[in-house]
Length: 242
Image (tube, rainbow, N blue to C red; front, top):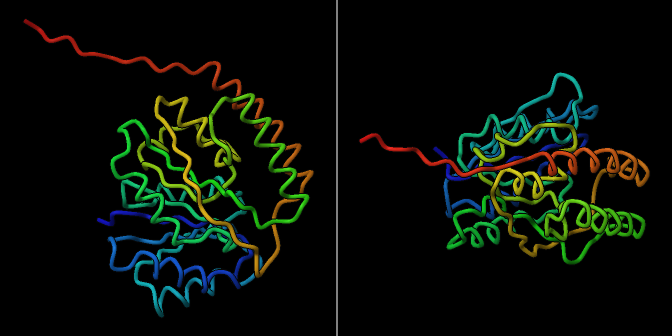
């Protein structure tokens, strides 16, 4: 059984697949047993063909899942986690802006951490995005933090490390990947933010526009806030018979 499953959702990222795979392998080989699960969300380019070629040629650790219909990033992450064989999951965005070497920072943060911390979230302290994207993200993070009180400065970073069992107990909905710290807190566990790097996109195009994020984010935020208000975690003790 692998010690870590790296889940990477992709949609039309064919040029980013080979270099990112090479970086993941370079970061993790010789350090622990791992698998890489790419989930293709019905790409219209030849991302699947590129993945199949890389799988056969260089990366025995690679597994490839393919959505029959386009379903979104959260569903891709969800299906990747469900298929994973390791009790711990690391996620990366497929655009290459997360540095796979930073997975080691999250693993190091897990060592000696309190038992209730089940999510280690990347925190992009220096963003390498356009001005509009940085501003919209800053506003969204501020509003989200105020409403959900999740004590997380950067919930949108795709680089995360979490326990598979805890993730699969969370309520599933589209765009849930943006609210993992709040959902983990709702489930009775804790999250730690870990500073990580961030890189400019060198190939392909972003799949999200500023207005798309704004309107969808507002609807999701209201729903997650409702879940937080309605959620309740109670400790249970078993009584022993005499």
